[in-house]
Length: 156
Image (cartoon, rainbow, N blue to C red; front, side, top):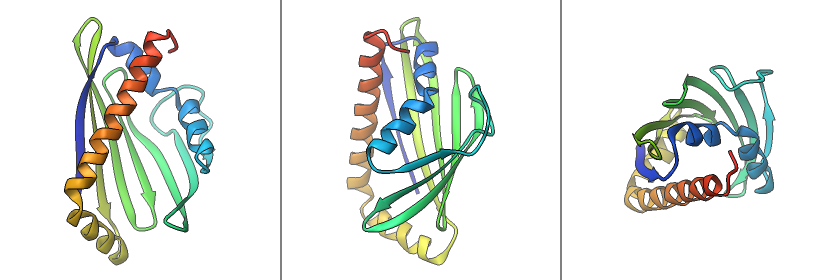
């Protein structure tokens, strides 16, 4: 099951990519929301092989998640593989420079079940795909807007 969207941002592609590579900010944001996040690699610069292990509460259950960066093509694309209890998810972010100061961000989430219970979960998600797609696009737009505001304030 796949969700995808694209948004345009008033910022150069290099600046957008740099903000997307600020993984410490994303880690802190997850921790503020109650997740536990640990890096599983020792890389000092962003690249293939970066990884995280996380635990968080979802619908009353403690969930575990493993994330690994599998593609890093600066400043065009990053792909992350996420594994969690029978689900494998690919998170893809692609950037295209529309002009010197404008960038298109294409984001997609592709969820694949690996177990019977995960297959049942994905099947139930398919029934609500229309509303989930709306929520996904809204959240993506809010995220891009926050990146644009961050760029305007002059923070990388």
